[in-house]
Amino acid sequence: MPVYNFLVPFDNNQAERDLRNVKTKAKVSGGFRTKAGAQTYPTITSYLSTAKKHGINTFEAFALAFKGETEKVLI
Image (cartoon, rainbow, N blue to C red; front, side, top):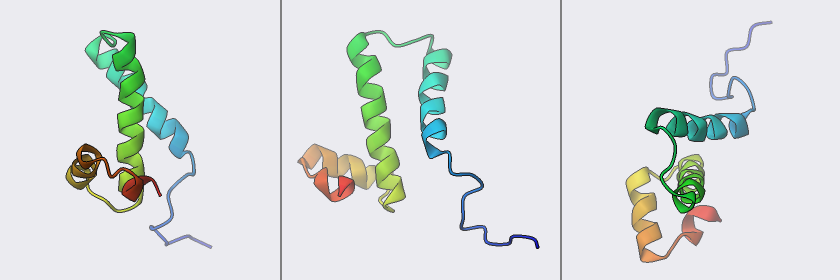
């Protein structure tokens, strides 16, 4: 029986897809310049990924972060 529900993701490996982005960033740019930058990058991408999962666009997520209202995205 074929499956036609395209709202369901092809796989459930979201963690691997999120981590692949960090690895690609490090490879393309030749690595991170500082340890702090390497630690901050995954935090920002995780926040944006969570916002996307909650249906909040990137610009709005950044605006909320700069206002100090990250709980609207993370909860």
